Length: 524
Image (cartoon, rainbow, N blue to C red; front, side):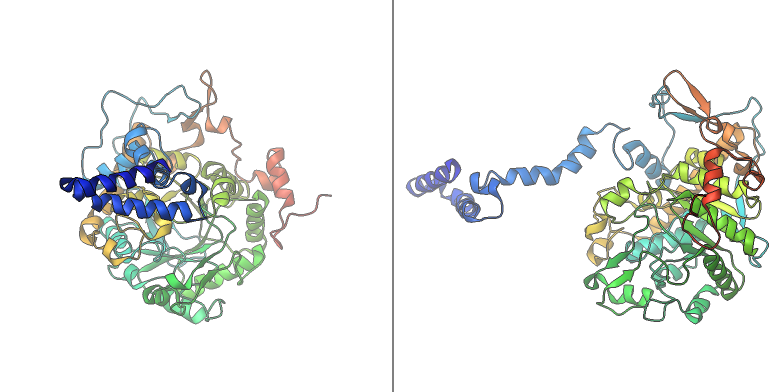
């Protein structure tokens, strides 16, 4: 009670000494706050330390910003450090992105990895590498860039952010994944190439009761702007988890995009209702391909139980129905809100998940007909090259493109209070985002990052990123030892799973898998 006593004393002083009466404007509110703190029952700290106890909450709210802008070094910070964000900002704005005085990375750290260059660089390497997506059962293949915009729904991002991303994709000649929240009018406005993601809620193609509607899907999927269809099985930020968008956040525009009632809870179940087994999933994918007019259809997943990946391979071999592509989402991915336990402790990180799916495709003899993509914390040409070494044909990025829009990693995505107008539906906050300006930055960032990849491919003496192999990527095991990545992880050869010549761990995964179920086969 020292502070309230001092405040009361100051009131008396102000009354006795007229020139100090302006202090009443400060003292009276503090006295009232102190009385409230003393009487309230929710916070023991404030009951014991009225007024001054608020300093704790003030410092707690300021801590992330003070740490980010004052305390952290350029190489600290999560999920993206200052150097990583700075690289995206520089490339998006067209600023100088070179670095003086050599690397700041500890090249003898166990986290360090590098790509091997050649004595004979190839100056004729492809400057604009593309990837043809669409297997033998696809009549309308798509020529994709090696870097595209990953899934981010309208609802998670605001209307202007969606517009800027799509306009940037059109200007730069790469695709924009809609996310599972439906194909909104903002996705369609500028005509950029789209991959339409279909999640378990079937937003934009459901019958009003949460079940898939073929007619609605056909009408949208056959739009010229929709170039591919992606079945979302899981995502890295919250694998195996559905979600609910509370009715209070379901605006008229979100309701229109998702095909739901305004003000009603918008539910994404944890599992799909259109299929429950690997074979049923492939049959549904084939149906989507037919309904779309023959466009590429693939799946996106964060790898959880490896035998389930093997089950999909067995189902393709048994039925003859092939997916056109598979996108592997790493557990380190994520742009919106997710339960912290799922973000931190569930799902394979991108590297391990990508290697498992690559080995499943190669080991079952399917890699030549099915494309493989990687999504998860990709922001640089080196990241694109490293994923190519692990088997990826192309990469998708989400947060990096958010940075190109002006995102400052304030970590407010889930509150609707995004200060840059990217991850919010608040029109007053979105006002700061100028679509035409940010679209140019989106396109410029993608172009400069692909250019950086081209520089690496040239230095490696290769023609196309698809030629990068596991032995080109080295990683430290300790400060005294390093190995090529294929000496650290198993990389299967063509058909090894079918020939039963794979390692014991992959042989076990294969034996557990069955085309008729995602459940593991009982051990015999």
